[in-house]
Image 1 (cartoon, rainbow, N blue to C red):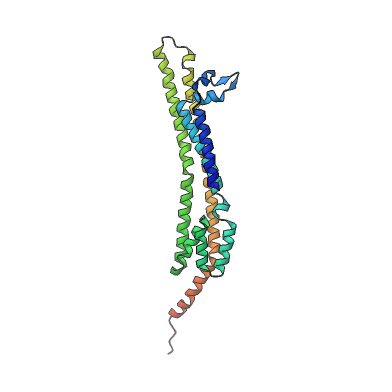
Image 2: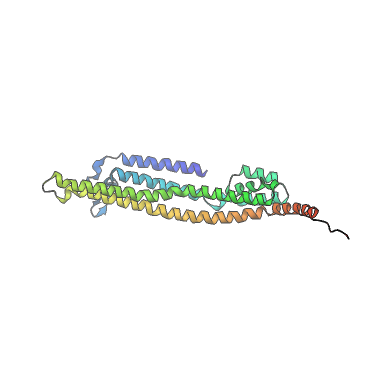
Length: 258
């Protein structure tokens, strides 16, 4: 459901952006300001091609944030209903059924618990190691997922700087084309330079802020899921420990009588 909504949102925004780009450039004659107010269409067209690229990054940023809000949440990573069912199955010794349930419901919690159950025949040390490795793997997967926001946050200001440099080149080129250039001759180039810088910062700031927030959210949920998985697997731990006690008693040397 979340992926379907995300796909529809992306299509609608991409279509809107396409129509916006296809608008005739003549609308920019009014400039960025009209009657003392900002002209949105003129502002967008003043950014040029680089400005539209940055706008595309802003669309991607919004799409990523919405997707992460839907997928990186407590109910998705460790559903309460799944935890309750696993607790009942593991407490009653139905380890195979618990493993099957984990495979049917792929989540962070189910992957960690399933990894531990699969190593039950090798002792609790192997179970604990498998669960730790699963937590590290899933945590890395979530962090890689939000890494795109960090990339956009670093890329957008660089594109804005590129637009700034290109605008300055166009502005100073007017001095070589005309003997007495007027300020109005290179004002559009200066506007493009400043607009792309503004666009880049407007995209980078929320992208980096969202990246930091999601990273802290992942750390919190990973720690909570780790504790929950250890709590769920505790009956299996006690079972494995009880099996080791008779073996230790049998292996202990018997006292000799003199």
